[in-house]
Image (cartoon, rainbow, N blue to C red; front, side, top):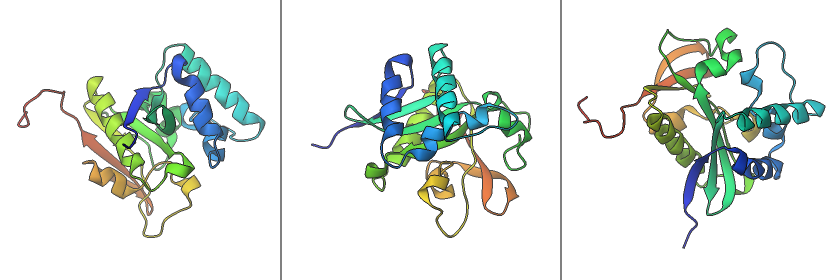
Length: 199
């Protein structure tokens, strides 16, 4: 029987799982960034010695009670990660030409999805996104926003951390802004769990 896939919020108790996931082969980009790049304004360095600083800062956020994303598991093995939270937590988005706010709506942003190299091609990115949608809905989020790549040819996996347009379209997101030939802003409106479909 195949291992069941589940997502869980990143908490101090699950920090070692994130470390193990990012330390695995194929994780050099996430190891260097630690999903801190968009959380800070100004110049941010990733990789090398900066990776250790980014890791420490993310760990401090988690220890302080912030949930910066969800860890995906096959059974007990950590195999994926998706970073999401209130758009204002991602300082760099505000001044981004491509990802600046579309309007004044209160939204949560998804800025990174990552699947263990050995587990790619199995649909886990879709399951991570589904888990993120459920998590956002449970926290009262009404609008979820993403910034995927939209082009005919596929980029190298290292540069697909925003995900592809097709990933979000399959999950019910629609394009709301395009400020680049190959990058778009997509949104999905969420209804609180238990509400009638007509609400």
